[in-house]
Picture 1 (tube, helix red, strand yellow):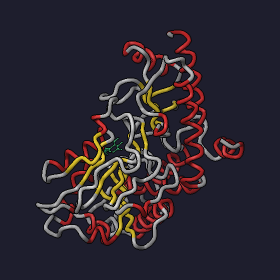
Picture 2: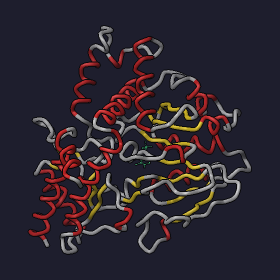
Picture 3: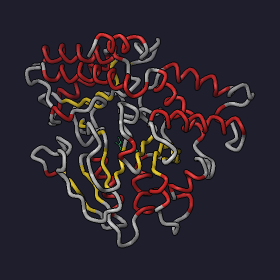
Picture 4: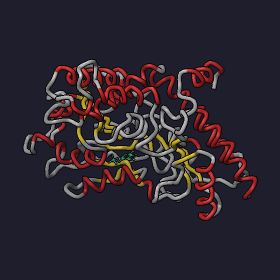
Length: 380
Ligand code: PMP
């Protein structure tokens, strides 16, 4: 990291939690900038001088209209897409989106392909497989170490005529990431739930990028969708409107009563993203933070390990385990005593996971790295 990037990390980004709060490494819902939380607190009582609180605001009024427009504008700017793309919000998280994709885009005889690098991409696949004949284009479960890497260039099948190819941009549970969208001739869909706006990313390589709200976008209960308008128009009309992506886009995210609170929080988080320098500045800060912890893994003389291959290690979810599950449990308990919370790994992967999304403070990563060193010395 260059000195200037380090300086940015130390000024614009959150540092230490205020009194009574802890370092929250939760995978999602996850920590948010306190400046955003404070603004939400204010708006909960009186939103924009309307005399009405954010949760009480009609979704058909001018105040909410403005909040909705601003959220779209900030996300559009952070995504860097033009008018050929729709940017909108839908109720529910990523799993809802996984279910809606085949309903919208796959006729009874159509197929789609899934790059399976994680439990989440597998979930996307298996939800679609309940109603359509879909295929696995890359099987990360079959690697010598399950889900230890993403495919290399061209290392996946591209079934002819497939209506889309889905991949998970950052694998939240496995600690791996794609450093660029896979090159393909198929219409590409990215699940950006755990990496949205965390780095410069070419959204225009995709027909759709979706992201549930509860990590870099703040609140659970809604998802951001960035999608090419012609792709949205290709969806069948023989499903209820409320399940159709294009109808949500055409209604500007107000097809029915939307999750107004979550949409406002997404808007504030997108504005915060831009205020600290956008995905580019965030990527530098995230790399600095992640390397502190990955280095603690590498410098532990083998005490900490994780199967993720180095070249595709995530900068958002840093995972590691000690030589014994009993020690993992001790690690988590002792870390809490040191003010470091939420480090227990996903139930399917075990070990520890430090989720350090865009607004997670640098200081928390330094403290965790120090704590790891000390714990290894005492128990190694
Ligand atoms: N995709 C990814 C990459 C995730 O990290 C998650 C949840 N952590 C999901 C999908 C599922 O999201 P949801 O719980 O909103 O359905």
